Length: 291
Ligand SMILES: [Mg+2]
Image 1 (cartoon, rainbow, N blue to C red):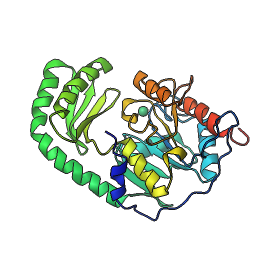
Image 2: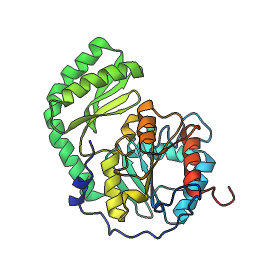
Image 3: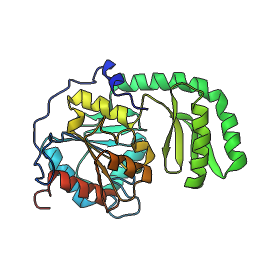
């Protein structure tokens, strides 16, 4: 699912630039390169729908301080633009991510005013998915029938996948996921992207990991200078040392995610969602000034 080297054939949407060194190294951490790029998932990682505020102020303070020092921050999410913008507006935070990865595959760059598309990447992404989904679309009705005959679930097509699932519970989603995986094994480059009870199809070359690799390439940042945080299965492609030397998972992360982060020597917080990520970032950078 990971295609690190694959990304280099695409040119960046704007000139790459070097970032200045900045980070205050936590003396408890082993000597390592300063972090220049922070990639956070959104839901369940920095944003908790039913908390008020949904993004903890302590986390905002750390991200704000790191951005002021030149560290770039990307929200790397399965949400689309309108859904993310609506949630961010509700969170009322005084900072903005420098980049967005949306629907786990499209890249947007904040140009000082708005988020503009990484044109070459997003065009290649759209083209590759259109080609792949043309092959899958004729099979989608039969897959929807298979699900509807066995489960209480919502299945539909949307602009991002010819087959989308909202299962009734994670047990059902696991079973349907296995069925979809078996289908993917027959179609080159097709994979299932799963997040909780949600699932859809995607091209294997595009995921949170390959998008993060493309951002790192644009910024001339190595994996040693990248920190990534996530909680669910769709985060696994970026929660790897191939893309990020420092990994954080909150207490609410899926067992598979905790196992991957632990195996890579990352930090698993005892705190949930954004509190857990703030906990991990404090260990990395130290407490923010005045925090
Ligand atoms: Mg999540």
